[in-house]
Image (cartoon, rainbow, N blue to C red; front, side, top):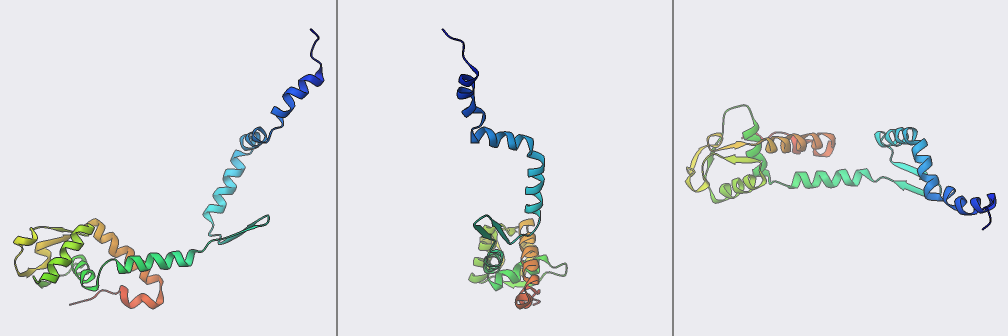
Length: 166
């Protein structure tokens, strides 16, 4: 058998050493830190448009924000929002009349996790003080805070974000 020549070694090892996956792996290993820093800088900046070669990427942030605002403001009715705001107020509790609509609103707010019922709805008095019967949960407080902050950013919705006093 003959001894392998240098050319034989190059023909066997060359495709392995100069393959694209290996080359990409070596580049990633050698330049991991600078590439990671570059990606971090790009992700931290609010870049809305980027062009990479023939490709142009544009971030459509405004429709997304408007969709979130629509969902958030439409999640509860005005009456349900009024109940949440009354429970969130530091002042005195407001009285209620236990109508069918009122009971339905409390059931819905409870199912969303925005309020905890202190008394079963069937055993709840027909009238009384709202804060004695239900309490606002942390999730309910977060919802109100998020809703108010989103509405405060939009000038045409500022009136909707204000507290309704009754």
